[in-house]
View 1 (cartoon, helix red, strand yellow):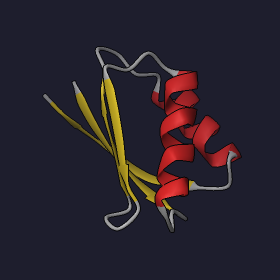
View 2: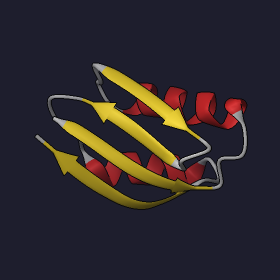
View 3: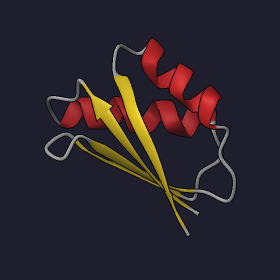
View 4: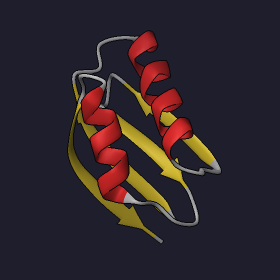
Length: 71
């Protein structure tokens, strides 16, 4: 399953790395990639606890605006 998160607050490559590390620490993912230019994080995972992930990202100072699922 592919999840695309729209995230507010990313401004540079370090922000992308911070989000990616937070995602990897909170959920089991196959792949995660963030883009501060697009304001998105794309996650490939079998299963995702969206609430847990949103809470973890929001605690870092960024804000999850939306989550879109794709098969």
